[in-house]
Length: 127
Image 1: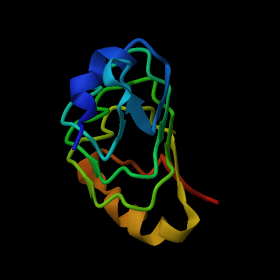
Image 2: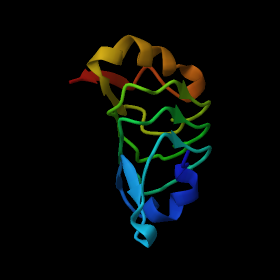
Image 3: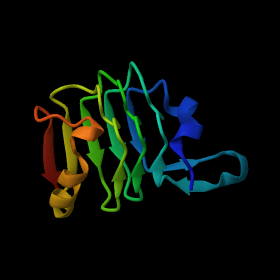
Image 4: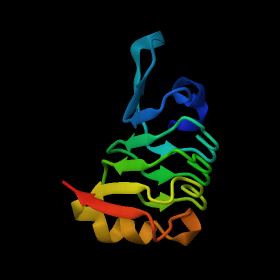
């Protein structure tokens, strides 16, 4: 399993992140992202929008903690099983979280107060 935390410096300067896979020039290997590590993007000042790929299973504790400009998170996959404590605490109060329509009920249960989810945030089911 490859954790984004190890690759933080690659994405850190970007304002929009699409995390589907990571490809390294050396060896030409491609790795699917299945987890975002603990505190991976904690305190990122420029992060505004995140799209998470189909193979993601875990969003670690504090993954997007205090990313104050983060206003949009899109979960493309249907495999997310765990969202860590304070994973989205400190993002924009009116952030929109887009999820697959077929997983609306399950994902709504994952986004609870302990993750940093607030009632002012919107969970939107998309195709």
